[in-house]
Image (cartoon, rainbow, N blue to C red; front, side, top):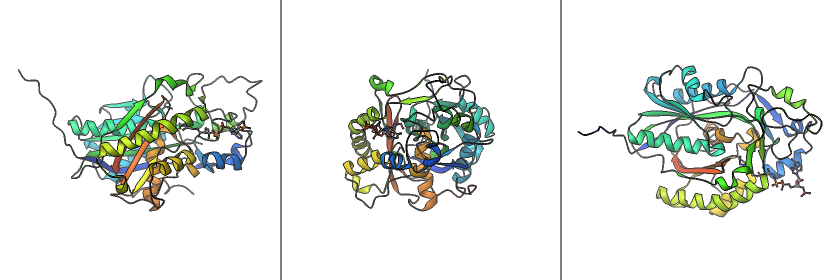
Length: 355
Ligand code: UT7
């Protein structure tokens, strides 16, 4: 007896990208109506001027659906051919059920394997790697990977360590076979010894209106009765400074390229200062574009890399077919990186429906 095995395609790539940005733009000054901070401090330490938070009928679920729809439409792959969906997110409102099947249903793809990856801000890199290997193994021909977060719902607007950093949004890519390989092997890892550096206090709430949250002004007298993210920022910064340069070196080596062949650097949008340091330490030349979506989108955790790629492609800062170095990192602590070929510029962009 021989048990059958799959045969896939060794050359895979991102065939399309789509994203959704919440309509509400929140400036540093608005954040500082509640937070004891200033526009100058926030910009100097993090590179953030604005972030976007959900409002009205925008939810985690609606953003994931729209980003997924746009990625599929922009890829030109018929939806019926998508064989699996991976949702990278830490802010889906329930653990049971997980979000993947709900999003697949919303996208009119009920029945396909659909599941969540919880790897913090590194989640998109994990999802992309698993999707690429799923296609390589022949387990599915096309895989939709969605990174989505509603960080505004899970943060304390008075916490000086997190309130100014996080934003909401969703980005997605379709991964499938291609003539030339466009996704390198993934370099990924974790450091559970330092897991307490980014965490949570309580369980995730059903839904929390940001406007309602902003009224919560005095945690000393009104103890928090809902889950918020906690982060020892300087501890994460130190960990990042030691771990990430090694990971970046490994990504380039494993991809079999020379660093002079990198056209674009798209690191997780955690802090523009971390990204500037990484680019400098890596010795990337000054004219290599480095994603800076954080300036007006904030840190959207697992959504930040697809959002940043989409922004660069939509605005012409990066071009389809260029070679990009991606690196996600965050809670876990964990990280995942790869060298990729950028997908076609999106025909439908996340800026089309913004004012
Ligand atoms: O996405 C997941 C992965 N996350 C990350 O990679 C985040 C990594 N960490 C960071 O990005 C940075 O640590 C932060 C941006 C979060 C904070 O910047 P920092 O330069 O590390 O600030 P700090 O916490 O070391 O504080 C420096 C100073 C302190 O004052 P003194 O002791 O120097 O007088 C703080 O009390 O700034 C003060 N401070 C603030 N001032 C105004 C701390 N938070 C604030 C604030 N506004 N929000």
